[in-house]
Image (cartoon, rainbow, N blue to C red; front, side, top):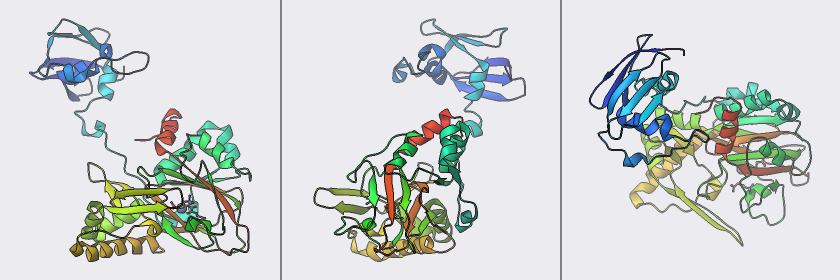
Length: 373
Ligand code: NM2
Ligand code: OGA
Ligand code: ZN
């Protein structure tokens, strides 16, 4: 027991707890009843009781601090007993602001990340769980990481996904070939440059991770570009708050259609969480449907969109690098935009791509002991 409880006092709705180091904490009886060990299945950690059925004014008959440090609550309502471990109470002390879960601030980056791109080698992440953990941690922290020495073989990227989670299959298949073809259903399947974008903004929900694996590079061109959309959005918020606010509150439509598909999603370009922190970016110039906004909103929207687009296009934020056969990168598709420079159709540049879900990656990261909110 790192920090024993020295004394407790019963208030009307809360239990006041004093700790040996001088900290003072408050726990609502309602909360204690809801989270008591006897309310939770010991094997799977899931709650056995119905929280909403707890009487709102529930209170203890007695609270006893035992010699071994455990806190025993006998409930007035039916005389049942709950035993709380002090370490558990301390770890869940919501009266300390730092314990209240707020999303960790992401590590924002700009073009200078290019000098030290987060990366690992495939054989090492396969062999060593700590190296895998560090690589996944980089995906969490930067929304981007490179992996080198991936076998130059079709579908090898699926083995990378299997290291942390599951493929998110889409209309493009479990994985797809990115190469220049005749009559492509998507401009990605040409030699054209692709300005930085997030993929599949026309899906709801959009895939949260994307992997791109190089099987063959172009003799010239076809360089990769990545941009931290959170860094760009944070800059926009700072330098043009009105533009930023407009992009968070104006729903726009993204759409993709081919012979067998008609996908559509309506959402603002920048999504905020309940605390106003930047949560997700969708940005894909090729797939934005004609704006259908009240007339007076058209020009303000384009002004804000232009301000965001100028930051995305600026050298200050773009990291440019070239993928060679065996190189793969992964991006958080709700944060980091990716693109490429144009390349000649006469070569045989060939990447394979697929989507996956971020929650599965973060789950693996936590299991491996990494830090993730
Ligand atoms: N591809 C590569 O989301 C997009 O439309 C970008 C996606 C065709 C699966 C390209
Ligand atoms: C894509 C894409 C980039 C590239 O397929 O989604 O953006 O380098 N490709 O070809
Ligand atoms: Zn793309």
